[in-house]
Length: 323
Figure 1 (cartoon, rainbow, N blue to C red):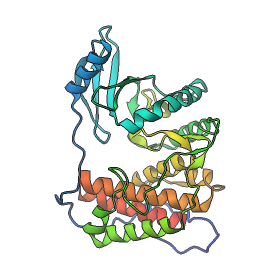
Figure 2: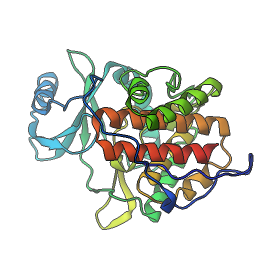
Figure 3: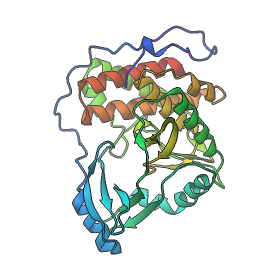
């Protein structure tokens, strides 16, 4: 996740539409070191399957870990042979589920490929999720056709809630988030990450008070790692997974998240920027600052030097794009 060279452009003239070839990955980030910052460990797959079986009597059989995700997901099989995917939710995610479930069902009925999801509260707190396995392939690269299909799906998220709300109570631009969006790792790591943090905190001082307020369904983590495509057509979405953080708010946040992923892959952001042309500039700047903080912090704690360098580059790119 990287940055492109900034270019001068007139205030109010709109963001520069530079090509992804302009990305210049800085070589001054420095190595990622063990530094005592909290890290998320791998999911205890067999233990999670056993907990679901104890709570439901489902008789699931553990079938191994799946790659990707923050703490990961595990595969399991039902006694009838159908395949499912299990993940772990925290308490705040479980608390949101009663309000989230009907919204997911509404967009699913409109044709959004969201796999069926069972949420199982656990005695130890939080919940396990049991999701039907999507018959699709990982979206390794965002083809132009695939981006078009994702943009179509994001429009289905519009106005599905009865009342507007804010998807995140805080974008964490001024202080640490709860286990993510930590400021300390960027402050301590290098001059390059401190520069990103200085911009994030500058945006935080003037961010709109109603940032993320809206009546849309917001995924909050819409990137290629959560997209599966049809095996015979990589331009069509077969499923969008990992709705653990989803909430009511402004779907433009999902477009910015998708735009960050396009930058990471070196693909043109123009289709996303065109959809964002009418969005509030202050909100877009706040969303870009949040994603910059979230991704650089996460990779400082869970990735490697090359990952951090590319995300610092993408942060600079979106600073230029959003002013």
